Length: 307
Ligand SMILES: Cc1cc2nc3c(=O)[nH]c(=O)nc-3n(C[C@H](O)[C@H](O)[C@H](O)COP(=O)(O)OP(=O)(O)OC[C@H]3O[C@@H](n4cnc5c(N)ncnc54)[C@H](O)[C@@H]3O)c2cc1C
Image 1 (cartoon, rainbow, N blue to C red):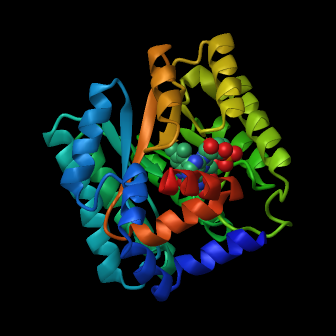
Image 2 (image 1 turned 180 degrees about the vertical axis):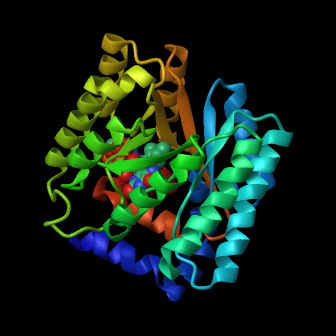
């Protein structure tokens, strides 16, 4: 692994670094660009502001990998509360959830039960739930649980990561099933036999996956695709495919605070744009992983920290 990335991932799990960096006012200023707050109220306020600028949103309370069923249930209730508040506040917003937060490490039955509860709540409000994709060890189980849930609740989608060697095959299968898919490059540390180590291959695969989806028969049924990236080359490929094939159900997605000008430009040009808003008190490890994603991001952080 790239040594800088390894160091940042180690810092993400270090209480000493956490204390040092979270106690530093400058870090909070930078983090505020990516995480609008620690409470649901603050996150909803950010969503309201995005909606006012013509941007849709998806909300994600920060957190991963719980170790007890009680924690999984608490997290599940929190997802349901977000759906209730989105409805009450009439926001153009759905939610993005993680199966490890709903107890996937404790058993597929635990995660399936909790996911079903969230989907039932979403169905009541006619809203949509996206199951985020986590590390490769969870991919097969995430797709299985998505498939199981989809039989009862149609408004649920998942995510495909272009760095995974298996993704082309997954896209073909899932597109045939009409799965709403978000396409990302992938954010976890993966071994070379599982994921392409070279960024050029990940980028080329990203475009290939979009092309496969655009050609897919599933589009006849209006399968919704989310082109989730801040990379101008990937965005250009998405625009070309949407324009050439008149893909009205496709949208762009970007993270809160990243590529804000590009988000606005796409919305101005008439594309659907959704901003992924993460919030919550456990921002430290999430933020460090964002920095570790690509070495180029460290420069981004430093420029904003000292700029
Ligand atoms: C809406 C959304 C949902 C996501 N969901 C998932 C998921 O479920 N599972 C998963 O594995 N991954 C997810 N990701 C993360 C994704 O896998 C990538 O790690 C991330 O988007 C960076 O890749 P990129 O496509 O922006 O391209 P890159 O080539 O990494 O970046 C292109 C440019 O964008 C800017 N940029 C990108 N990332 C950052 C950052 N963190 N901080 C600052 N600038 C940045 C930089 O200027 C960079 O040069 C999601 C991303 C988005 C946008």
